[in-house]
Image (tube, rainbow, N blue to C red; front, side):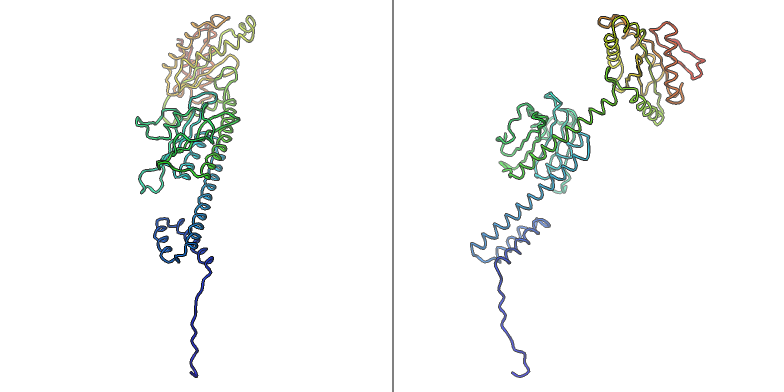
Length: 413
């Protein structure tokens, strides 16, 4: 009719490839953003999808490929996070803890453990544990524990199954990492450095006969390789630190470390309103020993006295070589009377324990206390040094202490 707009029938057609590419994309987005809605969405897609078997097969295949690519990407991101975390610290405990947490979460495992063996031994140096929370409402607040001793924090019921496996593991017989696993739901890879097994990475799942994907096994092996390098670097750093802090001959702290610890302990004593005592010890006639028996015997004598010192004092006390034939001991939370008792016990132990090929050795010892006598750490060292020389002047092989900085009150023991 004149004046009327003509009507047309519109027929919409779709390219199946376009349709299923769009569905594949939507399925992947739903899986990532709202996984709980995936099942409902898949049901809806199945109801609306043509019954053509080839199209449904294509949809299933592309969805599976998308999910595999997504999983692979998750594992790669987790591996990168582990690499960044363990390369950002030289603390072995932090390295183990960061790695075991990320591995446990990335593999969605029930539990995971990393055990590190002391160099050249079968004794665990450290362990770090991850355990997936049983309560799904906890939103992934995972439990992880870092353990520095073999049995620390382990309940009677062996709470962490991965820890139990770690304890049972034999570091020298870990076997081939490509070989069959002990149980179908356990994944174990040794941590190897320069052809030596230094630890193990263990992952366990509570899903019966879980099939570990190739990408998951590859991730664990990659993390194991990264850990071996990180641990070796951390151990080297620790060794350098120890060498910088200790006397090479006696194994005691050196003079520089003593000064640092004394500064720290005096500040701690001030903060807690406690006393701090200092023992300064000088071997009598070490030059005569060197001249008579040789410097090798003199070194043996120094090591002998150092061992007696470590065996006499508390674990919290700090023993150091002050210089030459002089040694020093920091006694935290120790008053003057108790420090004198320790010094006298030390003097008697040295005098009563002969040195091989040398015989009896003796020591002159000075004692001072902060803050009742000395008013700062410099005065504390000075007073102990002065008291030690008073012991030498009085005939050696004895203990002396100063009650006051002015030296006017000398307490002779």
